[in-house]
Image 1 (cartoon, rainbow, N blue to C red):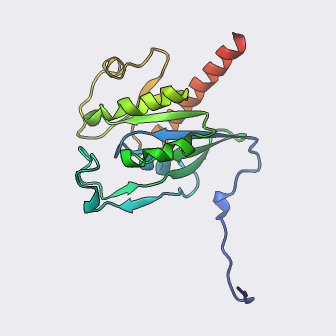
Image 2 (cartoon, rainbow, N blue to C red):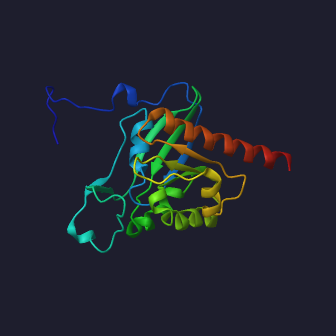
Image 3 (cartoon, rainbow, N blue to C red):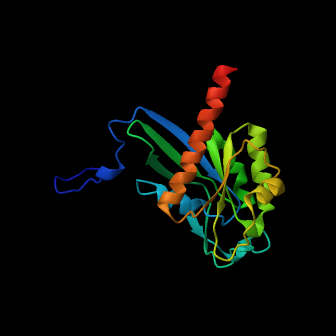
Amino acid sequence: MDFKSSDTITGPRAEDHLPHTAQAAVKIVIVGGFGVGKTTMVGSVSEIRPLTTEETMTQAGVGVDDNYGSESKTATTVAMDFGRISITEQLVLYLFGTPGQERFWFLWNGLFEGALGAVVLIDTRRLEVSFDVIGRLEERGVPFVVAVNDFPDAPRYPMEDLRAALDLPEEIPIVKCDARRRASSRDVLMTLMRFLHSIAMASASA
């Protein structure tokens, strides 16, 4: 293709460029069932314009996808969400949100490659969906924290009751969050980074 001098070539926005002070990058995966808020979390906390792969839900998914508790949801992630956040001037997190519908879970294999840790988002209206998600992470040996997304109409339980229901070991952090709020989502990521640091320190001293 021939370009004329008057043609405009656009590229990344200035705010999308990687900070020049960045010295290390960590891949983090945000996982969970359908409609638990993964796309919302990536979008709220990302310092760059997030990449999303949402498609409109159609009648083809009726009877296939379990959207209980998310009946008003009209779009779903079919590949991944992607965002970025700088934790410090030197440390950058790359965030990958997985598709929640089970028929797209085969894509998780690629998204988990190279991931240092994960956030499991859960919805207390559909707690049973989280069992398979957590099981997959345990099978892969991926360290994770659990974040209980605060939906207005979701039942609220003591955190220790949720820990018992999910059969989580004491050392795995479980926190409440509002995925719509940048500060709350960032706190979840900081919880994960502290957890990963504690694992690294324990391994170094073993």
